[in-house]
Image (cartoon, rainbow, N blue to C red; front, top):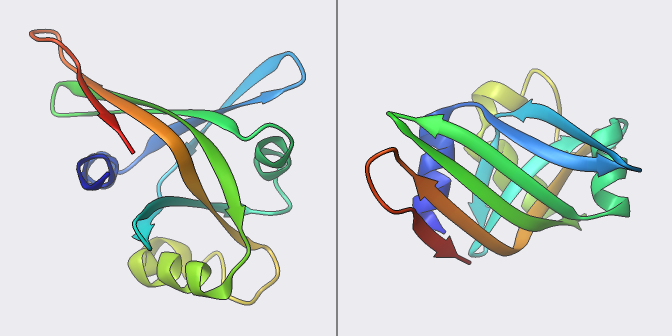
Amino acid sequence: MKEVLDYLKASGTFYLATNEEDQPRVRPFGAVCEFEGKLYITTNNKKAVFAQMKKNPKIEISCMNKGTWLRLEAEAIHDDRREARVAMMEDNKASLSNLYSVDDGIFEVLYLKNATAAIYSFTGDPKVIEF
């Protein structure tokens, strides 16, 4: 999981895909952290992406870094604990503090469950990481 976390952070922007009825939806994300041995992402509970993940937690994430790319499939599980939001905020203060506060009622975090990531390149076999 640490290798995937480091890859996502090094990429800066990663793209998260959800489903809305029969239509895929993809949008850029940037904040990620580790808390209690799990990989967490964050969003605003007023956004459609949050409702989509609550209805169908299956997501995919993709990003690129230094000539390689990562594809990650997982289930995004909502965690409403304050401690998880604090961990996300502390690890991403520069990017999140202008958007949210820990107790603002819209800042949400989700951890990734049953995750499988693969790091690809044009020159070798993919490296598969499960967590």
